[in-house]
Image 1: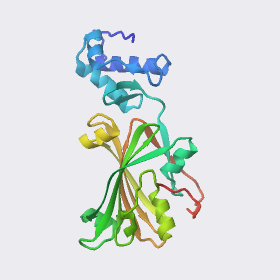
Image 2: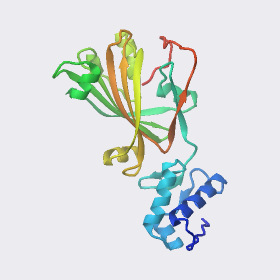
Image 3: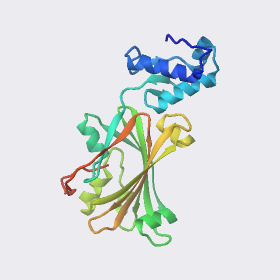
Image 4: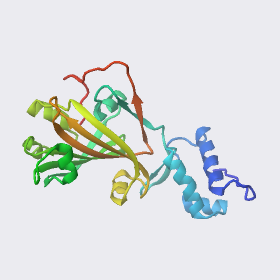
Length: 259
């Protein structure tokens, strides 16, 4: 890469590096999938500290222009994938990705019975010491880890959930087919955060990389909570897009199903 730094400029060196790499990407001289030289190589080539290079590459990764993959290195990222949010209907990750010609793979990381803590009891309106089923999955699309999902359901109401293998299977579809129950309403919330060590390893990002923390409380048609989900999305490859509508469309039996 041809990067020229002006040591006498008041513009910080990391910013000069970042903007020149950005220009190479936006001009098409660097294409999605192209490898970026290592921090050590760029540091020696440009006669700057590795921290300066790391700052520049880290900012570009946070913006979604670069992807940093463990044991591989830093590569030019493709365009961010949009994850639409509809304010008038429940839209599922699996169906949305299918419409884009992309598949979603699910790996079950944990599937067990456990006693609900105070937070989960509050959201699911459970009694003290009442157990829940935890299903933790890593969900990926096009070989990129997308999200870690931690989903809790009341064991008393859905005991068969404990026996099913939800690798690449829809939990929502199972609830409809086995119990004739669906998530009819949901309360979703989002907050920006950073990945801890375990999350970073699963999502294949750096420790402290930006993530979006998503939380859902799902209710049946009677307004009874049947699902509490905490998800951690990587923020460098995907973005949420909110879709608004004047009309209200009921989420009927034939509507999108999230797995």
